[in-house]
Image (cartoon, rainbow, N blue to C red; front, side, top):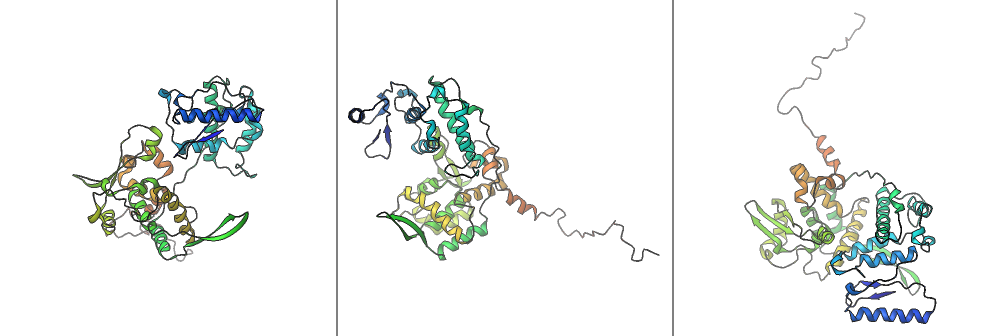
Length: 400
């Protein structure tokens, strides 16, 4: 059973086992709702007394645990809602025929059924699942069974035997000419997208406007700051700071803070001369130091909606000019790649990462290095090069 929390998108769940009578189930459900209400929807005092009898109920208890239901307050993990949703996404793909298996009897043969699911894309019949996706599934299932072993529900974790696949990463970025092309397309291209909606049981084709007045600014801010989308949307004029080296934005590292739930150093985004020219064009002199959003302050859009729209609308205009494999996230890669060209192994200090490992594998575009290498000049200056000098030239008349 799921109970909605007032004024929140979150829900609390409890699994009732061994109930065959509908009236009894209704009574227990009402009692659970009353219990939550009595505690002001605070779950720290809820206790899960019975152990789950099968995998399906075990997964429900695991989700409760992720939400800190039945967990003593001092052991609360404080996992954010988005992370829990992501874990539930992977758990939903466990084949239904396995959900009735007692947890203690779940063995390698049952895990083999999951493995067969992993070698094909979930919901598809063709073996196209990518190595990175495979590893995410295995990681989540290992976490699930670690929860079971930690709570003495089973003795072993069959997913520890699964091998992780090697992920070969070739980071790419959006090049300056591509970025300018996208901006031009946003300004002049087709703005309506055909979408199919279900209305009164029928599929209806309609057109949706994909243009946003602030979308071009989102592009400029993405490439100049190198921030994640959520941070771009939350950027304000009063986040500008100044020291002996110049001005910069001091921005919370939102993603890391969500994961670690502890104080983490904010990111310094340097305001370069080129970036400053852009900021002056959109109101730097007027708004600097105010609590005003930089992106779409007067648009009336909610910040959450803007995050979704940036991704969808940006990709829509990219596809119009043949850019199908790159997204808004690639603007961040552009920024980091150019920083790497200057900072080298110190780049991670400007991006909020702990080392260069993540940047080298996921952000820094190697093709930019190739492009620069193609313009490499070793013998600079006015040196006159005679490439025939010292070579044995072929005689015009070999018979003489």
